[in-house]
Image 1: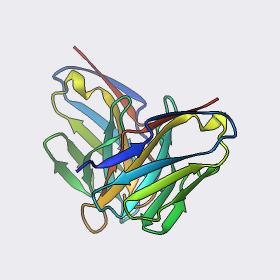
Image 2: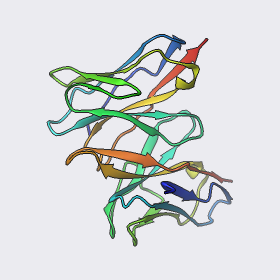
Image 3: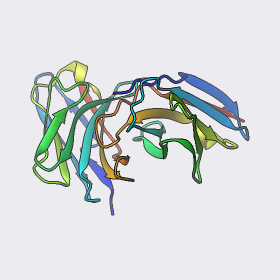
Image 4: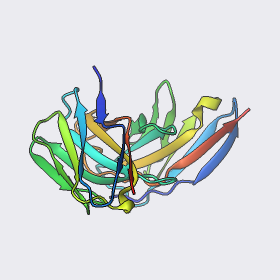
Length: 109
Length: 115
């Protein structure tokens, strides 16, 4: 399993763009990069997934450089409801994945 | 379409007691997982299944057993509960987004306390 490293916590004000970077130096050729969001007392929820370059959906963008050794989740104009823990996962999602501790994002007014 | 459901939602056990947690999904997913999450920690994989009748160990399998007799159900058993197994247990199932990538859907969790 590819090991990931991401900041333990981040703070932001409402309306700002938040970028959370994840390092995954030993990513394998077939691995995908997936981000999940978890609110207190709930199970994680899929946000976005990518293999290379840039992926964008209605919630976030995912930037992956050419060497794929890191990735950045970008949340545009965050609101208070974006306060959550964000997990970066690397691997073939159908098999065992390591969620780690994630990044705890706190958004304040 | 209920998604992933877990039974029960809460449970208190005494040390040494046994119990079974039930996970059910109605999305016809091949892959199913059991995770535990301790306070302030991330999710750790206990066991998983890549199809009906098959199971495999995850990161923290000791003290737990699982069965996947039907595609839609994944059971997690604790034969002799210990206080160290006090945790929130999440079940998930996965579907393929592409041939090699998948999205996991999580249940609401079961909060288990062992005294």
